[in-house]
View 1: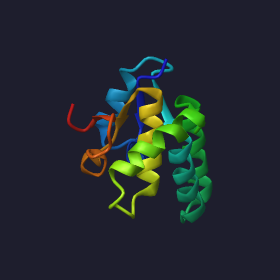
View 2 (view 1 turned 90 degrees about the vertical axis):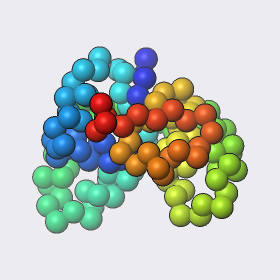
View 3 (view 1 turned 45 degrees about the horizontal axis):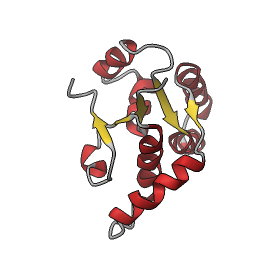
View 4 (view 1 turned 30 degrees about the vertical axis):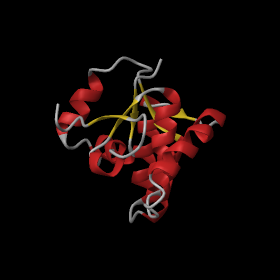
Length: 133
């Protein structure tokens, strides 16, 4: 059962194997405890497409999703999105963050991010920063 959902920045850190403490913290988790949102996966796919070395980036992403399952954005996540977006309606630029936050809320998992400030206003969302562990 998942306990953590990794934000895009944490996935990038794992793909680059730095900062080291993120990989160490991930290694302490049991199989199945960590997932990524399909929204995060979409952001990472964009990164591969826009990368100067797409073949290497594709290998790194494939290795990452071998270790971290991609959680589908389902009906429960869509239902959680309404209150998340409503609570932060004045913030117009962070629609992907709102979707990721809603997904974490729907799964009742902590969102692991290095951008805590971007997520602190979302109702019902628990945050962790593995760089501060």
